[in-house]
Image 1 (cartoon, rainbow, N blue to C red):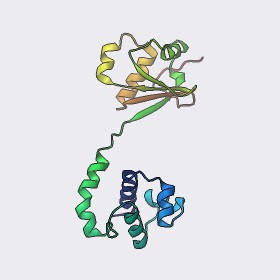
Image 2 (image 1 turned 30 degrees about the vertical axis):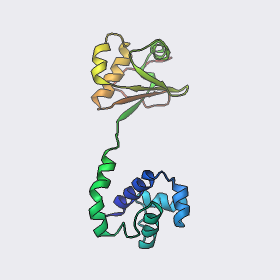
Image 3 (image 1 turned 90 degrees about the vertical axis):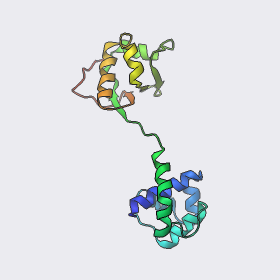
Image 4 (image 1 turned 135 degrees about the horizontal axis):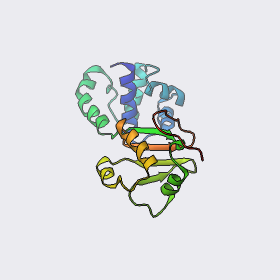
Length: 174
């Protein structure tokens, strides 16, 4: 295993037992930064550090030894692969008109799942099956942005006043 793989494994084990970095770092006698560097693959842990980590997360002291890892690798990979990862694109609210902002802020709007991003924008869940049924209700400018996000295989759209503009979509001043 390389240090990136070991780092991911350590992070997975730590999260599995609901231990935050500061708590685990204290248990094994490392600084928070040192443990973060190990988890991010920037630093390779020594054998003693691996033994202390294993014991701190409830594994046997030799958990990270190669023969032990081979038997555990499949179940760990399964747990990592069970995490749902979604793509999100962030674009400027400059790609929608002011009236569309009013549409997104309307509490009676039911056709889209929209979450406020404080006062600076919106998170919009893009359920493509459902979107096909409501295209005629969505403002045309927002529809263009949604299609752009879907064409980029995104499940979420973040519209942010500080987000990037793309020359592939129209822009609006407001």
